[in-house]
Length: 162
Image 1 (cartoon, rainbow, N blue to C red):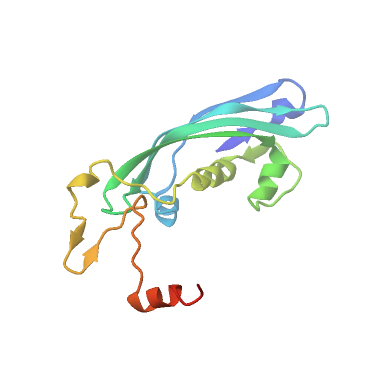
Image 2 (cartoon, rainbow, N blue to C red; image 1 turned 135 degrees about the vertical axis):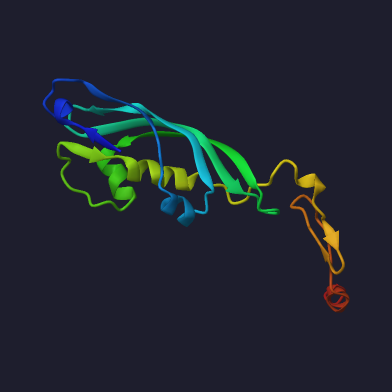
């Protein structure tokens, strides 16, 4: 997502308005283990402050389709990201080649890095109640459950230090 900064650099305009729909390649989605990204909207602006530094203010929102942690069914996960930072600082954080900002800047790496940080560790589909939660020799343990399975041999050691 290349943004033209010529008018901003020359002082013709005070800010560059960004209002784009984001499209991400299948390769990047597969690497991030995202099934798809739907309705991802990037809105915001790039301004130049008195020190001639570029400042980025973006709102990114949309829906990630992720595999359910239990059933692997596609699960919707809505996200919203707010970015307010100096452009060079953002580029340094994502290890992009930091050089003097020329006439155009690609803000896609900044956006993509922030989307990746929003991916939750675990997503559970809402219709998971119909899935089998135990069987012969196994049982699904929920995070809420605090089941205390103490090995009987170690239980004897518990009384040793009293």
